[in-house]
Length: 159
Ligand code: FAD
Ligand code: NAD
Image (cartoon, rainbow, N blue to C red; front, side, top):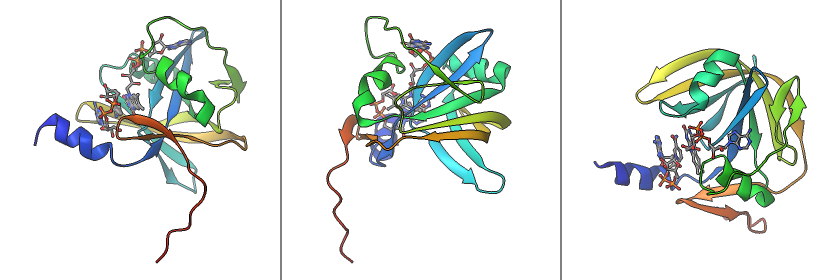
């Protein structure tokens, strides 16, 4: 199996899009990620998966904190900014939740402390203990087969 086949297959799992953010010595760094999952209700834990070449990796190891910002449908430019897909540098203003950097306008902001990290292959899984959550009533951004999409009107699946 080649890399392309693996990526094509994994890309057919429709996801939302998040921006992971952390802060070291007053500098905020963000990265677009769709490898995000809820892990445990009691205690409240989530997981993210960060590639070994990503600059944010060592920053999260150092700060021991991060946030997960679930992007809204109108925030696809932020996804491109934090995936390094825009040529020009754009200033982004962050807010704060529980003292951690968050993106205003996100559907959900989740503030976390790192509770564990596991190296698996070429990624590191960070388990985050959730310390606070902020919700907004907005439509989410969707990522499917390498393209950004939006939800269509609710249509019940017939069984
Ligand atoms: P950089 O490449 O240096 O940073 C990313 C970009 O963010 C740069 O353009 C930088 O200028 C900008 N930036 C950072 N901080 C700020 C700031 N404070 N203000 C303004 N701009 C800033 N990779 C994974 O490891 N795991 C995933 O789950 C994952 N999911 C992805 C999902 C999607 C839909 C996409 C498009 C990409 C995904 N990636 C994922 C790839 C990842 O987003 C890119 O490889 C990213 O460029 C790696 O970021 P970096 O930490 O190395 O930092
Ligand atoms: P793509 O076709 O590269 O990705 C489709 C799917 O494959 C992703 O949703 C993810 O599930 C998986 N995938 C892709 N690269 C991976 C990696 N290095 N490690 C583990 N899983 C990976 O989609 P695209 O639009 O071309 O992606 C844009 C860029 O973002 C690419 O460079 C891609 O490698 C990167 N990306 C990385 C991850 C990740 O590291 N977990 C996830 C998504 C996208």
